[in-house]
Image (cartoon, rainbow, N blue to C red; front, side, top):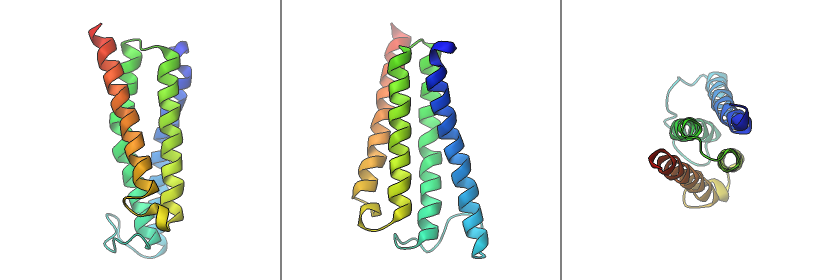
Length: 137
């Protein structure tokens, strides 16, 4: 697994990011006496809603990416290519998190936040195709 060390570290950081966001979301809800679960005041200008959604977006993006990354290692995708995709995905997810938490115009749907979310989904789709192709060849 040494050739995939950078990919493994990147995937682990994505997992850690989701856990940290879960704690942050729960702590933020607890601080204002909100119940666990979705925030009902679903407005872009509601910071608690943005915290909750950035956590959920992270969780939603993690599973297909992490599973695809592990499969890519199993079918021996080129380590440098996989590491590049993992770290690109991580960078996009961090940018998404920052934009979403800051709020404002960029964080509204259809703006920069959406571009970042779709970009991370495209990286995931590319990884799925690459891993699938490697499995078939």
